[in-house]
Length: 68
Image (cartoon, rainbow, N blue to C red):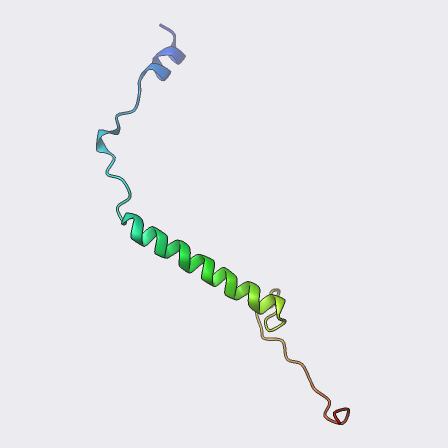
């Protein structure tokens, strides 16, 4: 038998696989947290509150002499 044939005929033994050790609830909670943080970052960027490049808040100077 060729080397490649022997290599591909040996199937891995999955009897040791225990599954997701944290469970599906923790996985869902983690995904929700990631989506919420991403939404918060997108909100800050698109409303002009946070500069993505520097991470600093955007300070705008309002000239009160023009206000009527």
